[in-house]
Image (cartoon, rainbow, N blue to C red):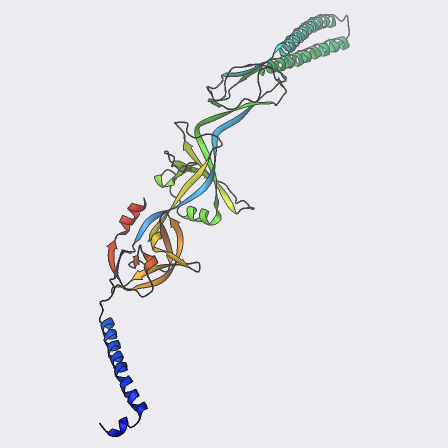
Length: 386
C-alpha cells in the first residue's frame, strides 16, 4: 500500500470506517436477493359462472286493494224502531234469509186504510156503472137527453180512476210493510251491525253490510312502461301464463293463483298509472273484503342474461362485475341492469353471453388480480336462490 494513504490521521479513520459500511452493503444486497426469490402469495380460488341467455320471467309486485266480488250495504227502507235482529256479526247467511225486523204496526194500519179506500172506490164505480145503465135505457126511450148519458159515462170513468188510485195506494202500503222485514240479497257473511234492538231508524239508515267472499277482486295500479311491457307479451286469456299470484300481508304466498280479468281504458292523469283487476277464488274463506296484499305479475323475457346479485358491486351509482379471462386475470366491467329478479339482475347492456363472472368474494379483488376459477353453473345458483 502506498505510504501516502496513511499520511494523515483523518485518512486512516476514513479507511477503517469503510470496512463496516462495506459489510452492511453486502448484507443488504443479500437480504434483497432473498426477498426477490421468496415464493409468491397463494392465488384466491373463487366461484366463476359463465353467463348464458335463457328465457325467464320478470316478477313485479304491486300493492293490491282486495274486495269481495259482491259487498253491499244493508239499509233501512222505512222509518221505525228496530224490533228484532235475527243474525249475528260474522254469521254466514243464505239468499233471502231474514236479518232484521222494524216495528210494523203503523204500516199495517196504512195498508188496512188503503185497502178500505180501494173497496170504497170499487163500490162507487159499481154504483156509477148501474147509473150509466139506467141513463142509457132512459135515453133510448127518449125520456132524457143524450147529455145525461154523457154525464153518467164521465162519472163512471172518474170512479174507475179512483179505483186505480186506491189500488196503487194499497200496493204502496203493502210494499212499505214488506220493507219492515229486511232480508239478505245474496248468500254471504254478515259484517258489523251498526245498531241494536230498540234503536230508532230512518229511511236510509245503515244496518250492516253483507260480503260474498267466495271469490275476490284484487285491484292494483301499473305504470305506463310496465303496462306496455305486459301488453307486448300478453298471453292468451286461458293460458297458465296469464295467472298472477297474491302475496299476503304476512309475506306468504296465497295458494290459489288468480287471473287478470280486465284493464281500465285510461291512465290516471295524477299518477300516470292504469288499474288492473284480477280475480282469486277463496274456497277456504282465508281472504276477506278490505284485506291488503301484493299482486305478483310475471312478464316473460326471452333470451334474458342473468347476473347473480352477489357478483355485482356499485361505484358512483354504476354497476360493475369482475370478468375473468383465460389467464385467470380479472377485469372490472360496467353493465346496465334492466330489472331485478330475486337474487339476480337482468342485463340490458354491457355484458354478453359467454362472459365469465366472479360470483362471490369480490370484496377481496382488485382490477388486474389473478385468481383460480372454480366453475359453477347458473342453474345451481338459480336453484339456491329459490
